[in-house]
Amino acid sequence: MTNMLSGYASVNGARLYYEIAGKGRPLVLVHGFALDRRLWDFQFEVFAQHYEVLRYDLRGFGKSEVSSDPYAHHADLKALLTHLDIARADVVGLSLGGMVVTDFALSYPDSIHSLITVNGLIAGFHWTEEWNMQTKRVWDAARENGIDAAKEAWLAHPLFGAVYDQSEAAALLTQMVTDYSGWHFVNENPNIPLKPPAAQRLAEINTPALIVLGERDLPDFHNMAEAMAQQIAGARKVVLPNVGHMANMEDPAGFNRAALEFLAGI
Image (cartoon, rainbow, N blue to C red; front, side, top):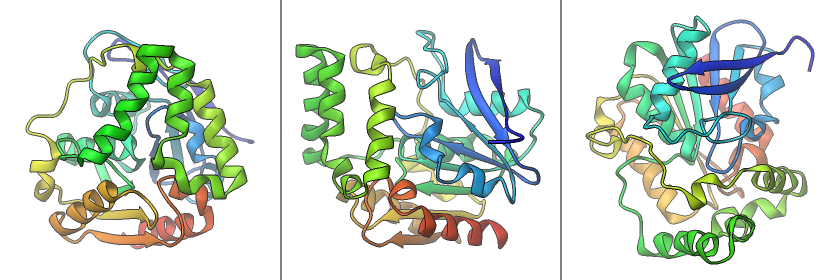
């Protein structure tokens, strides 16, 4: 796209790749596990018509470096914003990205203008046994048959069941997972969790918050969305009908409308 800036920022011992477009209030987009900044292809140019939009690859994903040194994604985000001279931003995160931006809101409340989670994780949430069994199969595949087998198992996870009804979204998801290094499938992740975890601290978040949920997402994500909606004061919850975990890709128009209306009202 025209007028896009891209580069690498050396933060906390790793190089993170980022892209920026647009002008106005800073808006940050954070992707999910095994994905990269392209998750936001259906949002990046649209949002850049209204905001200065930053999307980047989390440490260990996309074009950003893998590091075996201890780190925290939310601390990386803060360091990236500091590198780019962004004092305060609206932050949006899907799945793992939802955990990153929630931890960011708790750790750096003066650096956040608003919070949007999309089928977001909550650190410290107690997963159902069904989820644990489904996900264990992916790491078992990696151990027994290698990274490519783990990627195949991940794409077959029930988490992504609904996305395959949308050919363009399914193709992008498949491409991102195919391009993913698979490092986390075969290495111990040295991520340092926030303590106490966000699951015990949601009521501390006092920024405007929008909780977006895909109607067809798995029960665990419905439970996490409801916990955020109930415990974050003033939080607004929006359920996008007929879509699942990759809600922003499965229904770009519906997601973009909900996010832009929320951002315009704060």
